[in-house]
Length: 130
Image: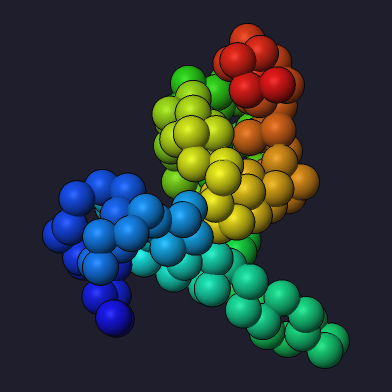
């Protein structure tokens, strides 16, 4: 049965009443799932351009975001795309690490965003997730 993630049955069961496996269990937040899929598609589309003629603005924006409390003088030369709370972002991603999408986004941020990587390495939030 195709439910597109909107099946309203009891948690942990299939429409026929059998126990649900983790792969088939319906998401409790389909909007968040669709959002992370869209973000990953936009970020990973056109990553290699011949001659550098085509740039991916979504990828550049994601990799240049910073936390609102970061020292602005330190990063004045850098082009900051937007500011977001890295603590909340990191804890949200760690709570959903069982999904491939969250793992990929965390990987991209850790490897491509120096401000996010510095925040994670400097914070004590890593301990509960290790």
